Length: 114
Image (cartoon, rainbow, N blue to C red; front, side, top):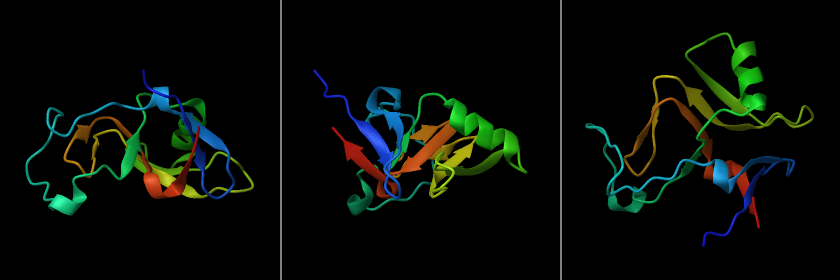
């Protein structure tokens, strides 16, 4: 049984997702793409990918100048830290898996709350 946890903005500690909202992937069996070069040190994932866009990301997409790609920022109006990126055509994970559409949040911008 997998333990559930929450991901919170490292800047303000606002919870931005729950572990059950994340895309599961295995770098051995996941969809990978050609041309992605990674060293053995980069074999671990450095990003979280959301299964679906939550309402707070939808509002950021609607407010964006581009309707193809953009930044994901903390939904706390007093914080606004950059957490990651979204792109309809997809983004790669550092492990080589490809997600399309992609709602990517960097591990380094998130604190895990168990």
